[in-house]
Length: 346
Image 1: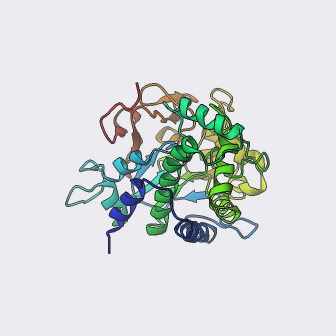
Image 2: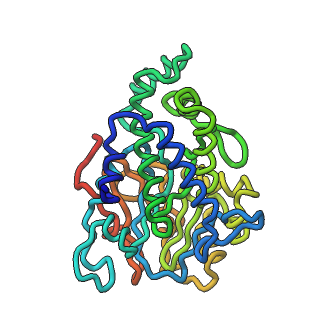
C-alpha cells in the first residue's frame, strides 16, 4: 500500500479529475469528521454542532500556518516536503519535514482558507472559461483546466484531514462557498469572471447535486477561528470584536461569519484583534500576541495593522508559511519562511 505522503502527492499531481465514487467517499468521510469534531479543542455549539472555534490554549504544539491556497496544488506539495528548522520542534532528535512532523503529531498544520479559484496569471483562462459559460458550456476545456487544479487542491486537503484529523485544520475563507450563495454570512464571488457561479455549475454538470451537497457540508462544518497561547487566527482581519459565545456559535450569527472571512483592508474596527484575543483568553498579555490572517494579498512578506498586532501574510508570489514556535512570541521578520525559495509570479 502507498504511504500516506505518496497518496497525497498522487492526488496533487493528477492529470484527470477525480472519479465520482472517490470524490463522494472522501467528501462524505471528511464532512462526517468535521461535523463530529466536538473535542476539548473544538467546543460544541448550542445547536449541538461542532463549534466554530479551535481552542489550543492548553496545547504545546508549534504551528505551521498556511495562507490562502487558491487552487495551487504544487504549493501544498512544497509545504509538506519543507524541512522545518532544527529548533522548531522541542527536543527533536532529527530534522523533520512538515509532513513527518504532522504524521508524528509534533505540529499542527493550519490553513487559513480559500482552497478554490486561481487568482494569479490566470485572468485570460477565466475569461476564456467565461466565454464557454456564456453559451451554456459549463465543463469546457478552459474551465476543466481550472477545476483540475481546484479539485486536486481540495481532495489533497480533505485527505490530510482524513489522515490527521486532530493535527490538520482548514479554516473557512470567503471562497468556501461552493453553492455561491448570498445568505448566512456568505456572498457570491466574482473577480475575473463569474467564478462562484462557474464552479458551482461545473460541479453540478460534471458530478451532480450529491457532490455539490457534500462539498457544502464540508465547508459549513469548517471552523472559523483559532486561539493559542501566542496567536489568534482567522481567514480575514476580524471586522469587529466578537465574543467567545459568538465565535463558537458563529453559524447562528451571519455577521460573525462574514466578519471573519470577508473584511476588506482598512475597514475593521481598530481594536477588534486585541478585544477578540481578550475575549478568547482573558489571561492574555496582548504584547505577547499576534493575530494572523490572509485574505488580501500583501507586498513583501507581511503587512501590519492595528498597531502591529494584526499581521497579514498572504503573498502568493512567495509561497510563504508562518512558523509559530511554542515557546516565544511570533516574529514576522524571522518566522515567515518561503517553502520553495522561489518567486512564482512576477
